Length: 333
View 1 (cartoon, helix red, strand yellow):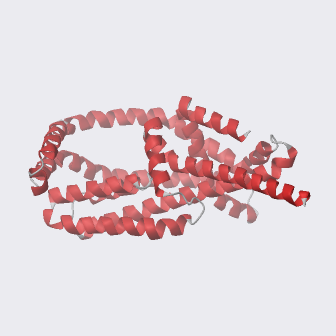
View 2: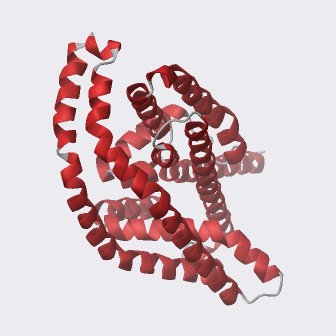
View 3: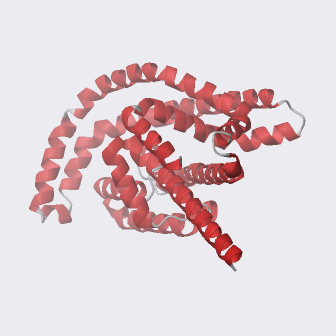
């Protein structure tokens, strides 16, 4: 049954990507808000009302973040896009790139594309607004699905467990709890990593007098959502842009990003996640690459939680077989 369920899930992600992504985001939002809803319910607040309050609070928080980004990030990003051709010329004149013909060719091609980027930025912005309007219904659906998961999630979990044979229902409920606990640890840790990394990068760029602090802070924060690969790309981009704009601070920026990456992934990330996922970096990298090949950016984001789910299910099956074998040996004795 578990094999059939996972086959159907994979098929859903492949053939109905938008639907699967909506369901997954709704589940992650429910996992993020559920502890507070449970707390309010223990305080004698009806669960439906607690769910409504948390969903409204989340929408208000999201709206506030968007307002802050529109006031601080968008103007800086427009300035950054306008300066990209000049930054690329400065980058092309760096000693390392002057001695490498391959990089010179690639940078020349990049510069030719960047020269037209400023003119295309307005059209891209309009296209983005139209796409955002088209995705508004998806956002509304995610909010409503999250509300009903918060309100009736426990009943849905019990109903799913009752689809399995009676002797296995306790085990299935335990498996569901383990899966939800691991997903909650993942999403909470990723959000915390994004917030910490974005804040630290913004403070560093501001204190050092580097331009485009909000752009690189948002880039570093977003990069944390794609483990291993995302922070690496954001760090390389930040160092290169610093070398092109303020060359004297390139080495300190390189040391800053290297230190930040090591602290994040050797201290903060293990402390936040603990042993709930415990995935090897090679598994994470291969999963992110494979997910990107299948589903693009969405697949890179979903790769790690999906690998964690598969690992927990396989571990549960292996543990159950060991218990059955141990029980059979004891009965034989």
